[in-house]
Image (tube, rainbow, N blue to C red; front, side, top):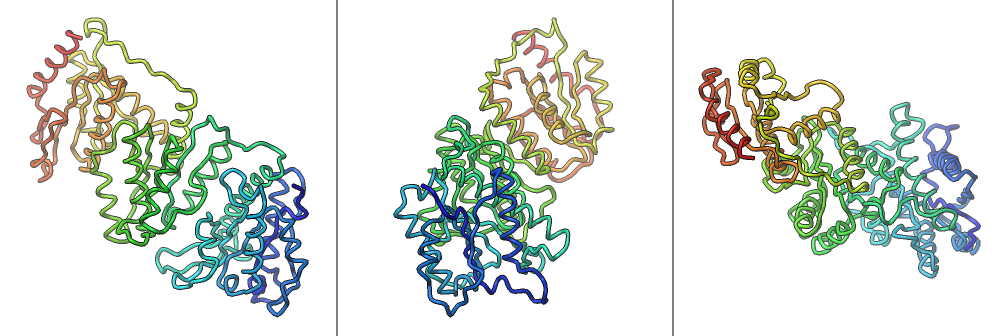
Length: 499
């Protein structure tokens, strides 16, 4: 089908008014920015139309209905004034009715309506467009102050910081509009191929929305299909089945958790973020699903529910071999996602390492410690080396992704893993035990023969009460004692000789 207008911007005229005479209106700036950016992406200028003259007293003209009938994409500028405007609501309904009669109303899984939220709507506000707008993914042109709870609209007149956030959101919108126009007009195929792995990117609370948008933007630029492509249902009885259906199409699920608990659907006690994580765990039990969960380093939860969720995640035993809890930079998370996708695409078959007798090579001991304990491990490291063991130590400097890869390689290649728990936190110990649990249960971990937890000074109540069946335990809170290590090393040598 040939469209007269490729993009129709539907807006309330009040939202284009300025408080200072002579300034350019928000809609004027948005119109030009979107038109230029989409043109750069398409390689040609798109036809963008909006009505600059009409007022609330005008009748809904036949010419407007005609224009909407010849429009490929509708961009709505959502605000309180928009939903109170009879004119705006008629534009929206008219476009949706036209789409319903068109054979190309929803190319792929994408809607032809883009929801730009200029001004957030009060939760108490009810309106007839709500059922139609709610499922759409929104492009939020505002930021919320985590301290005051107030929102601030992004405006090109508000200085460099606001401009940077504005252009990021504008670019996200422009790329999605350009991709959809390509699909509707049949100029190019969809950027993603059906045989590539798809990614489930879980909806988040507003405080990590920027990280969410950044990951989604990067993945889609690289040609991956990112689901869901519409907002989650807000009713408890619908949301779980919807999430499960979306996850069934994906090879990886990514969950970003911040300081806020987020939206709780009607009829549920859990937030959308927690529901998505629980459903992902259930799906992983039925199919192969890589699950990556990110918590910002040093995050401080805003309420008890979110803190309880974070604590449960850190102590959860359901991580398995294909799941990771990450408390690192968002760039490291992006790198890890790309690595997991690359592994899936190339279908790399990692063979089991061949067990070699210690008579032919030195056995490897990975001495895992926190940076605070790097000096305290000297005596143990030297003793192990004198006993003819190759000692591997973690990296404490360098790029985060490189440090993580080196750590994973050491886990796969060691015969004995020692977690040295001195000045490190109890969370450090839990995390390392979880990582070893995963590697020891995988084909890659067949070389790992023994795991030891070494409890070193200072003495704490947690260390005195520590018990585990997943590892041997050596307590050295009075200082290094080589005699305590000899039975363990003899056991390791015996296992190596019988391999």
